[in-house]
Length: 80
Image (tube, rainbow, N blue to C red):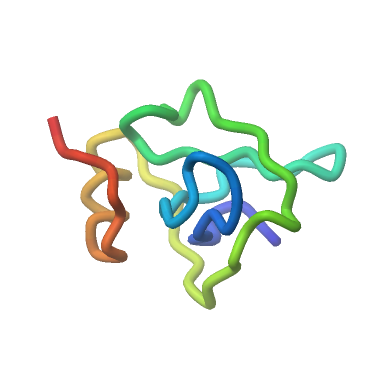
């Protein structure tokens, strides 16, 4: 799993939510969705609880671009 990969949560209260991998370190994936988890405060999650997609994107510059990007994947995050 690498930075910029689109993933879908398979477990937890965020099950079904799409995220982009903002970072990977110490066996954890740090995820952002641009709404609840901003790029500057990513959510740590165990990679075993993620469904990896085949899509890798360039990291967006801000949270609005990230929300727009994830909307194409049917993200359940609500727009402002």
